[in-house]
Image 1 (cartoon, one colour):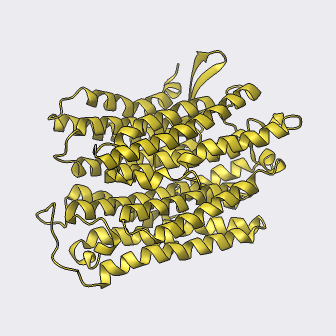
Image 2 (image 1 turned 135 degrees about the vertical axis):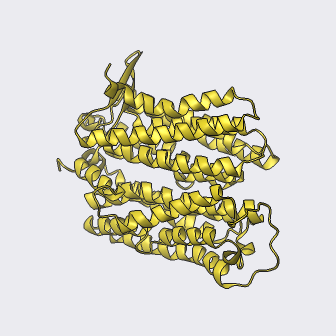
Image 3 (image 1 turned 90 degrees about the vertical axis):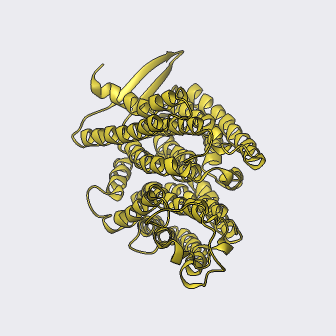
Length: 499
């Protein structure tokens, strides 16, 4: 095997090996654990960038291993997998830095960081999966890896949240397993193909394919938090802030959304999905989820739960864009995969800073907090404005392409959904921003964590500022050739090249 064939496996192993080694370290070996965490995160990012450069030069990267009984373990790099892998590797690095400080002095850090690394391994494996069987293996691996993170605190609330999380995700995984087996019976391992792996199976199998589509979407919809399969997500917010950030920006919810992209574009293909009339139903479910999530967010006083319902809403933009036929709508879905991740992780970093520094957990407690923690709330404000869709922040670019794609596809009702969602986004984010900057504090702050010169530890503050700046930068420089938007354009144009 050549190095190019091994590189996808090496990328996956770059977080798996440090994670496994961490389990064998003593709890007090903080320096060794920190070095392993940062080394693995940095190595993964560098390897992904090397592969990205190689793809631009026309290189191919694919690892295959014959499992037996006509099953193949396949890791393959294409632009879609790179889009998700780059997002995962960048945000894992900043979240690792954040988590090291956030969990300083807390118990069971060895267990946390071991599973933390394995969680990212599963996310990277999902990104690089070359067929539906490999995707399913990593998809379920992700469920098992994230459970210890959700229950990390060990409280009754955390354990209850973990049980709820398992009920939902294992149930969804079981449904997805039925779909994967069904796919395998119809066409084998189902290699991901931009023309659709099922493209030649229409006709006599049309009835089966329609049912199978909704089986697959049902299995993926749990992690993608589609209504009514979203109930685990707000409950899981009892997890530490780094876990919440990872769940909402990179790992679990993005795995579901990424899976929907793969099923629609690479398993069914655009022409077959359109021929079978599958996408209107997906668009309706996504639209209901968008509005429902935003309305539930309005009623939440707990800050992390408000952000969780915001994720329920915002994540379905990806499914909505996927269901909007046309290059422009697909670009909006793809670029929102990245933009939502960067903005949402910023919001959770800021929520964690408020809780860890001042013990603030509720929206009603945030009056005047911008005066005490101006950098944290500046980062929060940028990300919140981006979620609303204000230019020139990243969220505006996503919504612009989604709206334009809906008009090009002759579906103006989708624009109405997007506008309604943006107004609801403003209704639950702007009161937080207003209270933080323009209201008088309710009293003296009780400081839990002090820093000599900054408002909080620099390792908590730097990731929030960095991702806020990134949210602004990828909006300002969306037209450049290195932007997520340009990658999304190339992927979407390849999907529609033969139409």
